[in-house]
Length: 321
Image 1 (cartoon, rainbow, N blue to C red):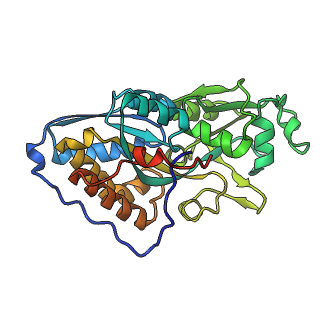
Image 2: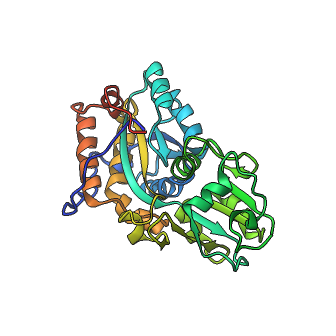
Image 3: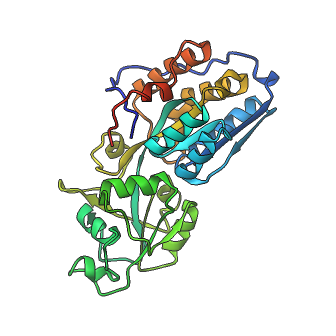
């Protein structure tokens, strides 16, 4: 990834939302696309904002982080929802198209590994076992192939499609450069993955924590052991980064040109002021307060015309991944 963030203090308080204009006088349309993981947060913000600015039309599309960046870097959308940071090739496409942007962190997510509730032989899985299941060179087709203590039952895998930032993050953290196997059932829609696992007693899948929380009566959540013991995702383990390596920040990217429009300015202000409250309501974890404070400061500078787009700052950044 090209963009990096600061070290956060914990004693700041985000400013409450204060409109910069009369909301009932706003009109126009806002188009968001990208991550299915960030989608529930974006939809919650859009719904709440719409109650105050009813003449603003807000579309929240979901084509995966990669698919969303294609549209964003083509200048087709105002916002890009992303469950990972922008990658070098995407940054290059945005630069070639003249699309400048600001990046804001809106929440944390604990990528969740789930199985069918009838699975009674695994409650904790190691990162090595996950890698053995998902690696490109894996020939495992039964649970027993992964762990001799597990039964000789078919292993069926479900996961986000290759345009998903969740897929990218999982592959980077669990498998590495070798990449993943292709013989799994993919979908950019996490609800499809939920249905798959709920209906298949041999299934395993991974997706954002919110989709587990919404369907926990139909799924079994696994703890993950990366070498320091079994840990389940929870608000405490995700923000504290003890649920490792599957805790991650979630982002929105806003096109700099779009930020010259009052409806986009107000929507972004509203999102940053309310993300800490709305994120837990839809199954995610609020970022540290200082993140929101810093992002609010960045946003106001951008609106005032004194800010430096993150796309410009990234031109001279050193890649971190």
